[in-house]
Image 1 (cartoon, helix red, strand yellow):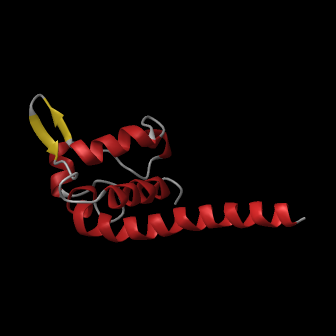
Image 2 (cartoon, helix red, strand yellow):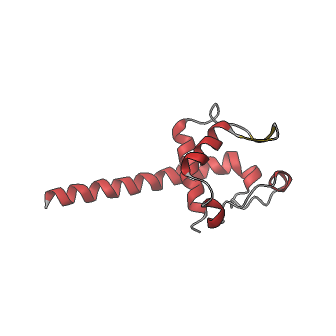
Length: 111
């Protein structure tokens, strides 16, 4: 019985930490990413349209990349034909902040 209670607490704490990560990520996304991706993640901004940014609220689009790929893009940025499409955030955000943004982006497809 006690073992089940401990396991339940660990599972709940894990779920809570993902929720906290997403909440922190929302604030960072709003401050750092919304200028291109839009506050709603749809990419319907001048910069988003100029750079062909995909709609992060589209679950089908989100299914095309793994969490690892998203983290790599957030850390290293994105280039197409040597043109920077998204700057690297590894020197701007901590590893935890990058994980928080990734967690938040995943919530956008669920809305």
